[in-house]
Each structure stands twice: as structure tokens, then as C-alpha cells.
Amino acid sequence: MHLPSPTFRLWRTKWATIVEVRRNLAKSPWVSHFGHSGERVGFPLFRDMRLASRSSHLEPVFRARANGHWRLNELISLRGEGRSWHIIVVEQLSAIVRGLGQFDDEGDLARVLASLVAASREFIGIADLEGKALFVNEAGCKLVGLRDLEAVYSTRIIDYFAADDQRKILQEVLPAVRDTGFWEGELKFRHFETGQLIPVLYNIFPVRDSSGAVAAYGTVTRNLTESRFAEERSRSLASIVESSDDAIVSKNLDGTITNWNRGAERIFGYTAEEAIGRPIMIVIPEDRQGEEREILTRIRRGERIEHFETIHQRKHGSLITVSLTVSPVRNVDGKIVGASKIARDITEQKRAQEKIATLAHEAEHRSKNLLASVQALVNFSNSDTPEGLKEVIGGRIQALANVHSLFVETRWIGAELSAIATQELAPYCEQDQRRVSIDGPPTLLEPTTAQSIAVTLHELATNAAKYGSLCNDNGRLDLKWQHKKDGQLILRWAETGGPAVQEPTRRGFGSRVIERMIGQLGGKVQFDWRREGLVCEISFRA
Image 1 (cartoon, rainbow, N blue to C red):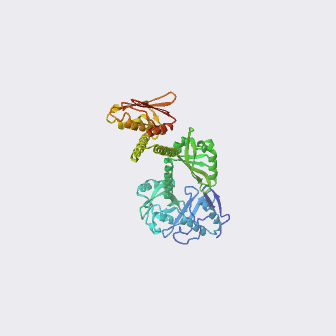
Image 2 (cartoon, rainbow, N blue to C red):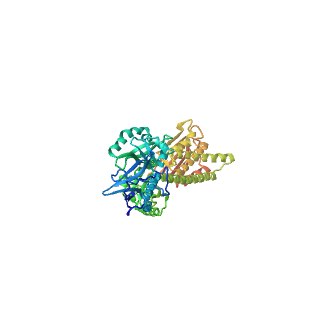
Image 3 (cartoon, one colour):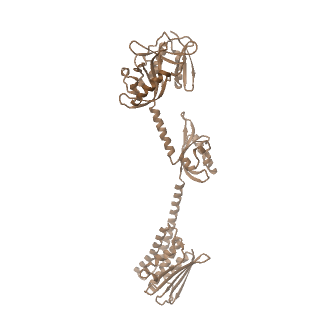
């Protein structure tokens, strides 16, 4: 039997292709089963089928058989004159649907529709008016853990739902479908074998017989497990993005900001409302905007930019150093539509690195100065015996070590002159604090100057302990300093009460060391060998 021409027409909506087949099938039952038994057709599998069962012009109709099985009888659309029925198929299947014209009789077409139901990934089911299950397709049986149709026949509608939802089915869902002809909402199915709860988008609608009377209930229910997982994953990712300390920003290929997280608000100072819709150049200094254009060019080529350090600008104009990672953003078709930028503020990190580099340079410089000072002390040291030489060198190096301990306290800024003097002269006033007098205004000496003054005071104290006022119990030492208007510091060392002093006939090694130390500072040394005690006056710029 051939269908009259034209047998069908098709048109497309936003989400589907709709095929309208015109044929009066009221007296021609379709006897094909829903794919669980009977003849199967070698027809390409359909991934999805949506029947617009809420529409007044589309009502799937089913008829019971003598053996108790429900089989598809006819699909009728009441529109204007005559009768027609519609097959609605998702867009991806439109090419297959266009081949429907090759079928010569309603039996072939019935098998196609049966194949649609069998191949669908949705849960498709039918129950009688008392709630007894009559049919569940293969995907539906797999979803809820039923082996076959024999297992389906022993179930009722309410058995498919979680205990918490069963009361809702009885008190809300079934009354709603009786009153309004449709109900849809999110519920939970129960797996018959494991008891696992399965989130679903459940709907239920009446199935009418050829007379228009409600003969059964049907459902096309969607498993929401994957979508829920995707939603949870999306929420998790969104939470990670929002809680990140880094700025995470999305922009289109024109450089317009489309997303702006809290990290970006904190780093750049713009709120999301202020930033979204504006060009990314609001955070790029003028002299760096060429970099941003180059980044967008590379993104269009599909390149990824990793750990690129550059300068960005905050809302109020201050500059920060950032490390950028920029990746292309693709749409569902794989086309690059924008870029995702992760910016980490490394300003403090860079400052710390620069400080470490400066300190390392300073340490190297000071180490060289210290070694040079030690070398000079050794070269200027002399004694009549090896033990004497060892003692002289050891004392001078100890003076350097003492002043270096003061540098640590000030983080290598320098050392106070009073602290250097107190440290060097402490051994000579342990018994009598009045024996040594130290007086002068606070004066911080930078490290090189402090080292020279420490060695100088060590030489003067050593000489006084051997020949001057510190070699007996009656001698005294006065150490004073003052600043002059020209920036010079005058340091005066005066001894009294010691043995009678005679001016030496030749310059000793101690005098030469002092002159060398003060000479390194561009200063001057004057020795006055008075009979009552040595007076040494030192001047240098401090």
C-alpha cells in the first residue's frame, strides 16, 4: 500500500526538526512492539526524541491488546481539516528524518517509531490508570535496574520513586495530570537492585485511545545525573575562581572584559560591575599596551602564554608587577572566541628578590672590605717573636669581629660610636668604672668607617695598656667626640695618671696602623706626647 502524495512535509524550529505525515490511520493499527521483542529494523539509532505531548495538536494514542501488552496504535494530530500526525526529532537527526519518504506503508513507519523509542536514551514508560506499569523502554529499564518487561509488569508507578517522593506522587503529581493533562518536575527515581537514588526530570501525561478517552499514562523522563554532576562541577569551578587570590579574567577577541573575579577586584581595584564590558586596557599602562595587542594576536592563533611577567596598572594609577598566564577560550564548535587571563600579583615577591640581590651584593662588598682590612692588619703587624705576632694579629682581628657583631644588630646599617668605644674599652674598666670616661653625641658610623675606628681604638687601648694610663691602677682615660659645622667629627683620646711619657724616637707599628685606618677615611691623626699622658686627636667626615 502506498501513502498518497504528498506523504509528509518538514520544517525546523530552533531546537528540532518536525516532520508532519498526513494519513488517516484510524483503521490501520501498528502492531510493532517497542523494541523489546518482535522484529527489529536496521535503522540508524536516534540519540534523542522529544514528543510535544503538552500541545493540543499532538496526542500519542495507544491501544491495549488481548495479551495485556500495550502497543502503539496511531499518533494523531487534530489540526484544522483532516488528520495528521507529527514526528518531532532533535536537530542532529534531521538528515535521517528526511529519508522517511522511502517507506511505502504504515507498518514500516511504525517500526521506525518503535526504533525511536527503543534507541532513545530517555526513560519512556506507560502505565494503566491504576498505576500498574505496562511498558518501559530499554534505556529506562537499565536506568532503574529492571531486567526486562516481565520485571516491569510487576511494578507500579509509585515503586519507581524515592520514599520521600512517593507521597508527592500520590497527592500532587497524579491529581495534577488528571486535572490539567500534564505534570513535570524534578524528582528522584530509585534503582530496584541497589537502592541508589537517581535525580530525574519527570513528566507524566495522559495517553488517549481512538475515541479520545484517557486509557493510560505516559512519561518521557530525563536522567539528570550527568547534568547535576556538570552543575556541581561548574559550581565547584566557579567557587575556585571566585575564591582565588589571583585575578582570573575573561575577555573576548576585541579585548572587552566579560568576567572578573574577586581576586581581580582585590588586585586591580575595580569591582566586577565597573570592569565587565570595558576594555582590558584599563589595567594596562600606556607604554605596555603593545604587549596586550601582541597577546591577543597570539591567542587568535591558538597559542597559550605562560608565566609572562609584565607591569599592570591599578584603578588609582599605581603600578604592580604581575605574572600572566593567558589561554584561548573556545566555544562548543572549537572556535576561539576569547581569552582567559590569570594574573598573579608578584610585586612584593619582586621587591624581595631585589632586596636579596642587593643584600648579596652588599655582603660581597663587605666581605671584600673585611678581607682587605684583615690583609692590611696582617701586613702592618710586627713583633719580635712569633707568639707576639700572633697576639697582635689576633687582637686586631678580634676588634673587627666585635664591630661586626654590632652591624648585625642594626642589619648592617652601621654601628654607634659609643657602642664601639664601650665594647673596646670594657676590659679596662671592669674593676673601676670611673677609670674610663666616654662622652659624645649619638653618632652612627657606616660599616667601613666603623671598622676603621674600631681598629684605631683597639690600637690606642693596646698601647695604653702596655705603656700608658691603663698600665697601672691610677691612670685615667677620657674619650670624647663632637661634630663640627663643616661635617667633620673630632675624636679626642686623652690619657692621664700613667707613667711619665716620652715621645718615641721612631713611629711604631701601632701608629702606622692608626694612620692607615684613618687615612682610608680621608681623615687626619695628630699625636701629642705630653708628659702626663698621650693625647690623640682624630678628625674625619662622618
